[in-house]
Image 1 (cartoon, rainbow, N blue to C red):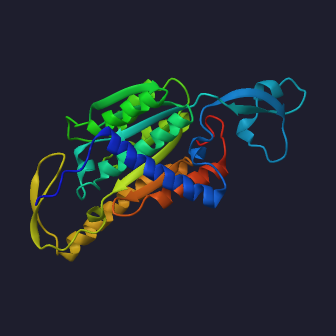
Image 2: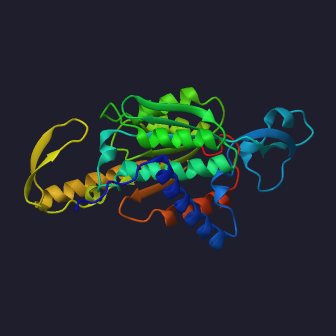
Image 3: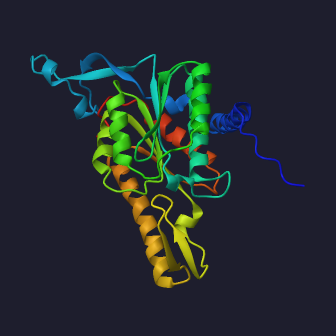
Length: 306
């Protein structure tokens, strides 16, 4: 008897996402006495007023134009906009399809996007998605409501990318051109690419950014299988390598670690939320920790992460 095919209907997808969302919310409530939706805290800030400078205030918050009038030093204050804007920025290039069946990097990324999409909808946020490879693969402009969210999730899970390559910088430039207001941007990629630091820096300065790097266990520690053919998912090129060679394995580990360290350094430099998720590990505790840190950090005015 052959096993039945997995249920990929919208109802099955939403059922799985709701189970994950409920699990995360329970853990958050137990540990923080807070709200799962605190992941959105601090996004969508607008200028409110000025007040006199107090010891401990950020120097960058000083309103120099008002202070120059000679009545003292004043700082800008901000308030959260009632209507928040969220963009899911997802790398769907061929390298994202590496991994075990049902637990590929792209599968995990879609799950995380789906969880946050449902949460955003329940908080009445404007939600959009931009999926990219080395081309724009899918764009759904921001919208509100569960009907919009369900359609967005279905299009994300149904998407069959047409291009194999990766261009993270181009994907970010597309997002920057589409975003007309400060937004919460969730960028998910394996970052197997180069020359994207300038664009990532611009995104971190202009928006509230969360970066999630997806890794497959075999990308961290390749099994010693002897001489085998390895095929590049994006170029289609196949090379024969001795996977049992100590020198090759050391280079392989070093390349992977360098890739992870590069994106981590960029995020730390700009105080940007960063997660590195391996597909064979339960990512729920990592998401919970992200919510905790964002909840502690609180709202920041535009440009404060630069």
